[in-house]
Image (cartoon, rainbow, N blue to C red; front, side, top):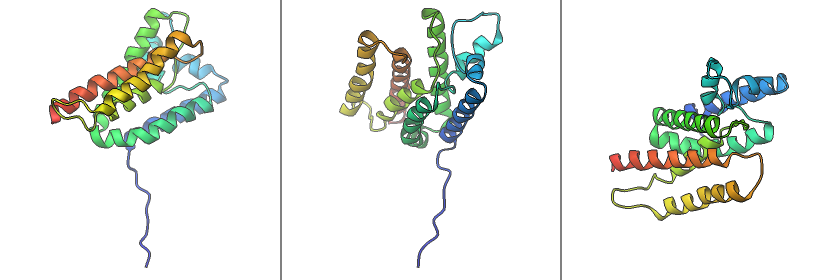
Length: 190
């Protein structure tokens, strides 16, 4: 006799985030890019506009196209549920907001002619954060070191030597935030 299999909502925070990213992607498609420009890109704009401050957060929901969305979503759906189970939705919200605001503000200050959008900063935060799950007080797992070298090292290299439309700085900021919170949260629990 076969047991019934049911579908389980296992990661509400990550699924909600992906859903919001998808909605912003569809809005961007419907408006021929205007919604991204208005709400889902962080760029240098007037400090008198409330939208400038809102975009410091909302840029993580925007994506340039379906390919960009699917690339970030794949990582979010692979790593996100593990991180959400380990750390909980409230801690992930802290990571997502910190990554969004810090990368938005740094881009605003130091790169006045560049707009950023997408969830790759939070993806990198989750990658580094997840590598801390085996952390114990007084020890640093070799996987944490290797993940930092591979993922962040690649971004540093590409930021210096590769000219593309990818914000390696956002990836680096996300990775550093994931590392800081991963170290802190796992240190206090072990």
